[in-house]
Every structure is written in structure tokens, then in C-alpha cells.
Image (cartoon, rainbow, N blue to C red; front, side, top):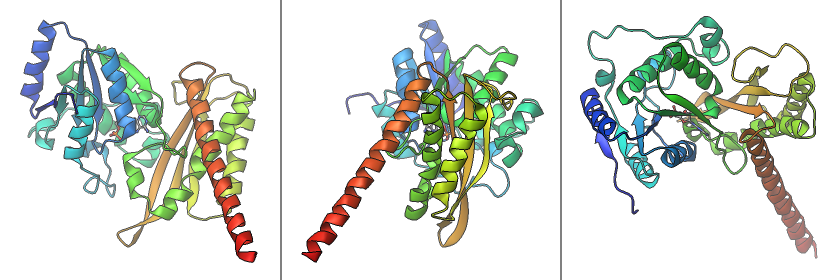
Length: 338
Ligand code: AMP
């Protein structure tokens, strides 16, 4: 590794002093907030930030305020040493790694939140209070880091909409950059929670990107009727899920682009298809349900059209390989028969 190790900032004061020095140098600052357990999705955000700014700050903070009761706060993966290595590889200059009491010191009583139309639907309905926690922590972090650009992943589409709204309404300076979803080789969106999936349920999880891809193919072929695009997802999902009972769709919606309102006409050139799939898996011997999020931005513009093509390539690649192994299995059987 040739890049310098990032400096580690533990307190609010250290961040503010460090930021003050940068201000005197007129450095442009890019900021990537995360909960750690970094993967290539996070790295993509970091490398975008690296290419567009003089200085890159990463924060790693598993924010208790955005986890509900019975959620995985204490079990959330914490991999600080590996995260530091990835941070260094991706040219991060500073890592803000605070304790919970540094972010929420005794006497803390401030609340930040968006209205119910943004915070109570979709993920907000499934995870009450989640977006209050997100808005609060990101507001604190943005005040401390004061970045020129904030990098967010498209994978958490509702989070992007909510935070864009906070930044605009509170007159914050940061410009929001939304980075297309980074996917695994088979199309599944990368997520820190994918590591909770058992081998079998990880295979079952492929249904979600495949169904998304059915919609994407129809869009690429010129279909603009919302009902047909949703139907393509549903029939692909129904066909695939008939082979196993580990997965079910929690919600599937077509939303106005960069908002959370469902599209109310049957024809649209631009929209977001958002879905959550529940996967039944097993962790440490007990049954567990993992919610996997995905969305597609259907719009004939870069980088979104490229992201749709990329998804298709991944799905095609895997089915080609699987075909090959099926062919190989048949050959082996024929060999045995000879
Ligand atoms: P998290 O650590 O899960 O809170 O995520 C930190 C940031 O990384 C958020 O802006 C996420 O949307 C983004 N992110 C997570 N997974 C991906 C992915 N597969 N592709 C792009 N961005 C992602």
C-alpha cells in the first residue's frame, strides 16, 4: 500500500480543529458517513469522493439512534481494523471514529426529523423512528465535518430523499452526490447485512436482482407503462420463488424520481422501482429474517442507464456460467454412461 494511513479523529473538538486548518487552505472536502463493516459499495463512495475533492473524510459510527427495539444494533458487524485498511487503500485522509457518548453526550436532547410523508412510509413504516435517528446523526456529522460534498448510496434510496430534504430545508452547505448501487457478481446489491445470510439463503437472495432485471429489460426495450414494469417484476419473482419458500416480497412500489410519492399515472419515462425482500435464514442456530433492499432508477440518462445495463450483464453472466455447469454435468453423466 503506497497511500498514507488516514488520521483518526475521536472527538468533536479534533474534527473541528482539523476542519479549521483545511478551511485556511481552502481545501474542498468530500464526506462519506458509514456504519463501518466496509465493502466495495462503500469503497465506491470513497473513490468518487477522492476524485472530486482535495480531502476525503470517512466517518464510522454505528448509530444507536437509528436502530429500533429488537433490531441488530449490538450484533451489527464492527470491523474497525479492516475498515482502516480499506480507507487507506481508497485514499481517505481522515476517519472520524467517535464513541456514542461523544456524539450523544450527557444532557443531549436535540431532535431533527422530516415530516411523516418522508419518514413514515416504506422503510419508515417497517422501522419506526429509523429516519429520526438518521437525520439526527447526519445533521451532527455535517455540522462538525462541514463538507463541500456528501456522498450517499442509491441503495438506500429513501435515506437519500430524506437527507436531501434535511440539507435543503436547513440551508446546509453540503452538496449531495448520489452514487449508483454497487452489486455483487450475481447482481445482489452489496450490503453489510449480506454477511448474515447462510449459503443457501444467499443463493435464494439472487431472486431480488433477477426480478429487478426483468423490469429493467422491459424498460430498456421501451416499456413505459408502470403497471407492466411492476408486473414484469412480480411474474419473474413468482416464477423463481415457486422453487423455494425462503423469500417473500415485503413491498414493491414505483415512485416519482427523487421523491417518495407513488406514481399515480400509468405512463412515466422516469421512476424508481423500490422493493424489499424478506429472506428467512438461520443465525447461530436460530431462525432469522433478513430484509434486503433494492431499487432501480429507471431513467434514460447516465449514470442510471449504465447501472441498468450493468445489472443485466451480471445476471446474464451468472446464467451463462450456470448453463455451462449444467452442460458440464450432462457431459459428466454421459461420460459415466459410456
Ligand atoms: P451504511 O454503512 O450501511 O450506513 O452505508 C453507508 C453509505 O454507503 C450509505 O450512503 C449507503 O447507501 C452506502 N452504500 C451501502 N451499500 C452500498 C452499495 N451496495 N452501493 C452503493 N452505496 C452503498
